[in-house]
Image (tube, helix red, strand yellow):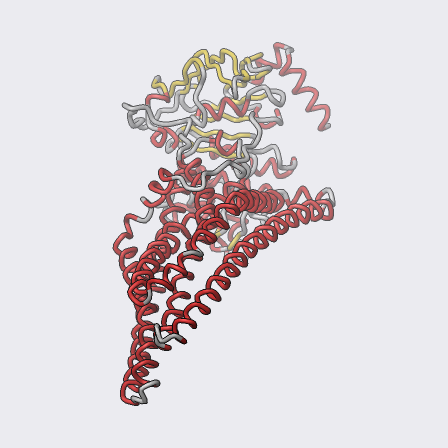
Amino acid sequence: MAGKTHDDEVATKAFDSQLTKRAMEFMLPYRQLFLFALVMLVITAATNVAKPFLFKIAIDDGITQGNVTVLTGTAAAYILLYVFRWGIQYMQAVSLAALSQNVTNNIRNSLFRHIQSLSLDFFNKREIGRIISRLMGDVASLDALITSGAIALITNIFTTIGVAFVMLKMNWSLTLLTFTLLPVIGFITVVLRAKVRKMHREVRAKAATVTAAVAENVSGVRVVKSFARERDTLLKFKRKNRSSSNAVMRSIILSSTFSSLIEFATIIGLAIVFWYGGMQVARGQLTIGGFVAFLAYIGLFYTPVTAMGEFYAVLQAAMAGAERIFEILDTKPDIIDRKNALNLPPLHGKVEFKDVHFGYDETPILKGINFTANAGETVAIVGPTGAGKTTIVSLIARQYDVTGGAILTDDIDIRNVTIKSLRSQMGVVLQECFLFPGTIRENIRYGRLNATDAEVEAAAKAVGAHNFIINMQKGYDTQINEGGWELSTGQKQILSFTRALLADPRILVLDEATSSVDTKTEQEVQAALGKLLEGRTAFVVAHRLSTITEADKIILMRDGVIAESGNHNELLKKGGLYSNLFHAQFEGWT
């Protein structure tokens, strides 16, 4: 198998029009909400433009002229303007929040839906924590661009143009002097943007590493505790966390440097305009009210200009996030329905391997496998580690496709039917019985979501789970945590049998389903297993040979080929590898 894929440090363009176009498609279902929020922001910006003009009127026509009526009217207008602005800002905030949540949900739902459709090979090559990082951090950064970021950018552009127009109408010479600062701001932005881009990639990569470390250590907490490795694990996590924190600090320092330089340049420009404008007032070329208003307009002009410069960091985060999100969305499942795939009719349960070959990443695993499991038979698959046992049952469920030969169910090639119609008639019980957070009833019902409470309890009674369930605190409504730590290994395994029985599959796969239980628990599990196997075609991957002596057929795998085949008694009489393994295990137990 290939190593895990790390895609956090992928190089990202400063701006990618194709990625942006694709990202904006997530917003299209909510375009009316987007336009409403945009209009609210534009109106808010317009109220900002009106404020300095009120200052001018109040000073020139009110204060300096001693006109109390004008001054009072201007003050009232200022209050009314703010009341109006408050209402607009409230609607703006609510609409932006609604837009952001809708877009975020849309992206996450699309990403999660696609991840669910991907083949096992995708998950084999990626760490869980990094997948989680895609769903959380990258989605948030992309949402920041296509909702608040995009609206703010559009608003800032309109505000800058509007304020510039008003400033030119008021005093063209002061306005041109103000514009001389724009090349300086542009130069600072260009110089720092490469560093900002590199720093942001590092922050995202370090954050994903921390997320991956948390996911891996929580999943492996039992191993950590079993070997008393809490301190070592903590030290490793601290190193990764410190590295992430250092990257964030460097990013903050760089952003602060950028903001400080822009602010310093703005202050220098403002001081020059203040001096030159003061000279015009002294010469009678500009009124005091006009001068005060112009200074206010300078602040309104530089605020969106600076914001647009800082928007580059948001853009970088969004481009990096978008590239990683679309890298997953563009990943095609290895296993898909053929163009003319048919729905598999109700199965009798016959399964046939015809000269099946298979390999992972060009490494051969299975080499010319041939056997037939008739409907209702139990076929046990045994052999040493790496012989290809689990691969065989994975191929039956079409988790992977054969690289040669064919697998038939009721004489139909499984590649010619839809995946859903095939897997819906199959049940799988793994060595690690995964239980979801929720009640015992909900976990059993996962086998068939529309099953009634009576059907759930009937399945539990059939496999012997009912008695221990009703003795729990709340019976079938007892809450269990992820993994079911409240239950014994045997209880969890019997619950997994109950879930499979409720699904009523025609073909059943048990992959080392009894290998982790002790000998006493094995007897309970075997009784439940007997009920589960009745009338079904079953494939049982087993390490403990004592559990499969009643199988109709035993296939012993070795180095990717069938070394021996037959029932228990036939294989013992042959005196071959199976016989040697069985006697060795039996003597070890006695």
